[in-house]
Length: 273
Ligand SMILES: Cc1cc2nc3c(=O)[nH]c(=O)nc-3n(C[C@H](O)[C@H](O)[C@H](O)COP(=O)(O)O)c2cc1C
Image (tube, rainbow, N blue to C red; front, side, top):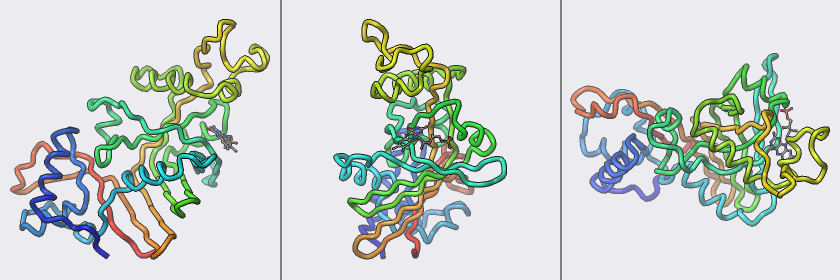
């Protein structure tokens, strides 16, 4: 089922404007197919994806809507995240999704790897404790999978990608600021759960005598999921499933797109359930 396919010219202009604003290619497959229709020569990697182009919204745009529709439902920001332990066994647990990394600079390494889809930030913020098992599991195998179920809209997202843990020893200034911001934004009970009961007054909420939030302890970690593969399933109406994948473009031939070499972009295709 093809929905809302735009004309080649419309799509091409969409692609160009996305490039100029963010400095990298966000190559929705609808664009690939349409550009191909206009007989533009494609690299082999892009040609391989010609069957894509059957979706008109990226996972990130779909997720934006799902989050908005469920915002008022308690627990709608609880997600399950699975890691792999040293025996190659899966371990899964619930954590709180704490928003996307909104202000990642364009020249930050995590932006250059990906960072955005449809012009929207994709790095997913969570937090955890250095003492938890998942820390050694992430060190063993950083690739993890998050499952997010939205009961109101009957949608499931399975988001795969490497997890990064940012502790107080991380000297990336941008990530350290984000870690401290997240600490400050936690509710008092959550903040308190990271503090050593022996040295913290119960009920202090991680605040000093003047009510100011204390600095994050060393065991407080910012946890970032950097999505590379998203499997979206909607159960309402006609069941619909879509796979989105982050790829590196390898434009070549007579494309004259030298600037785009090795740029990340997202492709999207509808699949049979
Ligand atoms: C509703 C709910 C929210 C939770 N939120 C978090 C969280 O944001 N971060 C976290 O590390 N653990 C959270 N937990 C606890 C984890 O599910 C898990 O028990 C803990 O992280 C230890 O897991 P691990 O030993 O596999 O690392 C939450 C649990 C529940 C039930």
